[in-house]
Image 1: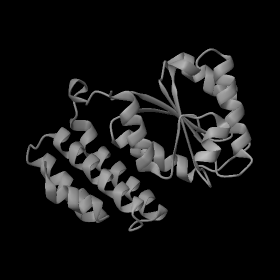
Image 2 (image 1 turned 135 degrees about the horizontal axis):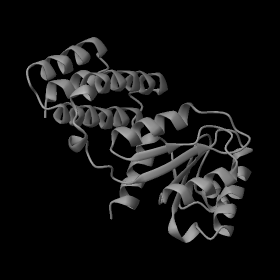
Image 3 (image 1 turned 90 degrees about the vertical axis):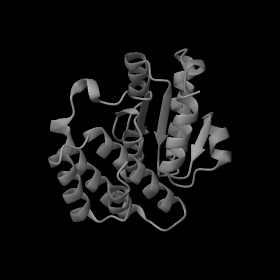
Image 4 (image 1 turned 180 degrees about the vertical axis):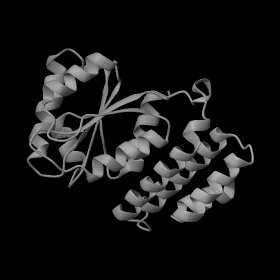
Length: 209
């Protein structure tokens, strides 16, 4: 793995990171190695965010760098070389809430860590979650919400999933705003996360047992 590329991305040095990635490809390097370095760097970015060294704008910027890296290597990735996805995760901001920055960061982190992510967007009705679970057979669902009114919508969504007979088959995580164990218990979710790294770790624990 190219440790210099990992450092350039995790230090948010966009110009240097993109130039280095391009040079690796031009010199015949393996695009999967570049992708692996990008993923390792994004894990480092997540760690820095978790300890307070990075903030939301830094996460968004790291996502921009990641998109640039992917655009460089994508033409050189053969279909059979594409890394196998670790499992599917459905995520959306619950009905009545239109905040998406936190959700989008979680989507970024899950994707760059190898999960197949189905992003339902914002203000998502509970039936849409149910329909997507049935359609994709995903085993993990993430409910996002920033406003306090989202707590009730989260509970209603979990209850609806249970009424549809799907609850025993899936794990549900919640996040956003002032989420804590009390809210987790109220909504009936399996776990809650304080940041995107928590979401990645939960998905990894649940899908890679």
